Length: 266
Image 1 (tube, one colour):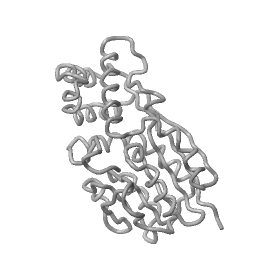
Image 2: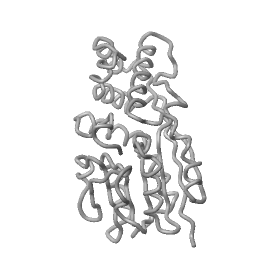
Image 3: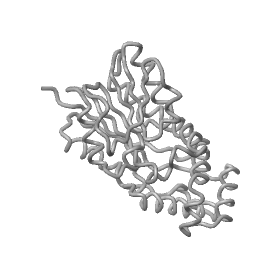
Image 4: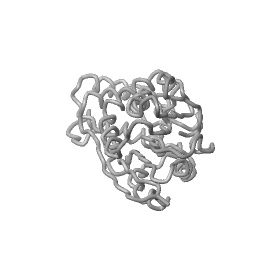
């Protein structure tokens, strides 16, 4: 991820843990399905980039077994460190600035990470260079520009307010250097990196209890920034959070685009 003072959704806040749990509920099944398709097996050497919470790291460790290895890195390892031990090593690392922490890996994965990284090109080169010939890279990132609404069915003032706050949130992300159309670029970027067998798909839930949890935690996380930037008032935020709690809003997420490819064999 980016440096701590650049990343809008830093891990230091208590809302980060709530967000990680909600993101896991929403997207872990998609991520795990893709990884299993790639043939993950006992003994694989893996790097989880920008690990955030422990769910993907723990799942990988179970699949690679005692003869495998899972290296989990992030600029703030306070949440991922809960998975440390056994085959899991947790290390502080900035993928956009630091050299790859390992090479000759079977699998490298980053989910909802690169969209926030200032030097995305360098980060991608680092991940590609960490692969062994035949090793797989799976990148999963959001594309808010392709679906900017949190309420697809804007039929009343509650939905309109939700979408306006989402527009403000996107403005904060863009101001921090996030590329809001990055997800759609992943297949091309993998090909341009010299990888082969490029494949991609996209997924986003339109309504789910986890979407409600994620939205409430996210808005609380960035509340001060929204108000300071003049993008929302405290009254509007309180009203929106009450609307979310009521369960009357069908809240969606931005599409998560998953793209995977392998390093060519000699």
